[in-house]
Image (tube, rainbow, N blue to C red; front, side, top):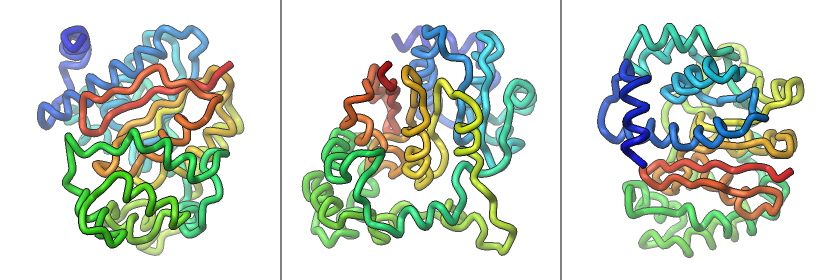
Length: 285
């Protein structure tokens, strides 16, 4: 199967300059994940949260298949830096409708993580965390595991111990979040005193019927984004998630747990070929 995706990448996306082989493998996983959408004629409009190399792939598919692609990104012009090719970037920018800004406001993100969780995606928090256990993966990248363990006062990383600690806390503690915090992340978009950016994701999904959503923005955006997507995604619609393995990333592993625990969704594909991973889920008709 890899030879097929490599042939597609070399023939149609040779202009992208990958920083290393791991980054190229991530792009191949995008090809595999988006292939499921190609075969569904009901897919017409796709919402991507967070631009990058995936945007180039969606732009090409959209042009060929007549898809309407909306990408939410704070700085669309920076895509040239992410794909390291100005010519490819110019083509991408031409074929994508950009919502320049953020999906969720900083205020909403802060409020989301300050509360205790009764539910995630309409399901009890404890059920979601239990289902997320299959996305705890340390064999490919365990660099953050010791820090996660220390965040809960544990001597070593244990999947069961970490999951129990999160369930008992009934929230995602500041100590846990701090392991994945970086300067200028979603909690600090407006630390420089500029006017707050309003999130545009809810308005987009309230205005348009979106057939597929690709969640791949910041580490902490996906959970509150999922609260918007889950209640608005049409039956038969898709959600695609990148960075699904914990503790490599915090981004989507709990979202994936929420989906796995929800009988209204099926999961046709999980890509485990990279440390980041990728999952495709479909809301049942």
